Length: 124
Image (cartoon, rainbow, N blue to C red; front, side, top):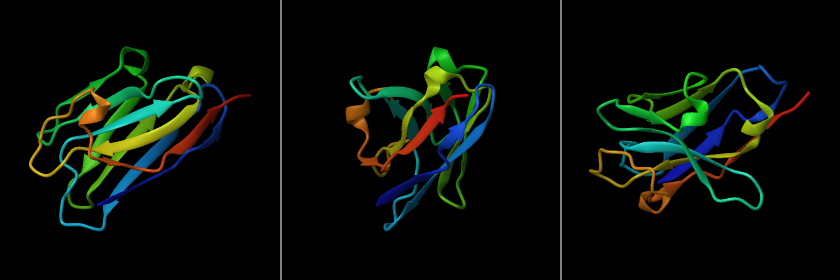
């Protein structure tokens, strides 16, 4: 299974971006999934996670600004990012847990599949 993240780019503070993550190459569908982000020199940070039943959780710093969603039929997950701030600048990664695992976790070592990352730069 391969995950392909896209949608990053350069945006001004206060702007919006929508990240997408598509799964391909296998029969496994995205069940429990998450978005992480990483800046150079820092640990990869949990941003948002979604379980197969639709429950979603966000890191405190993005609550009210970011919205994670999914499309089961297209086997995709999304991260709508609004009111972006310079401190949101990072490489964003999507991640998915293995077959049959339906609940997301904040522990990155529990994710079996990772996308290649997409760079989000928030700057004026």
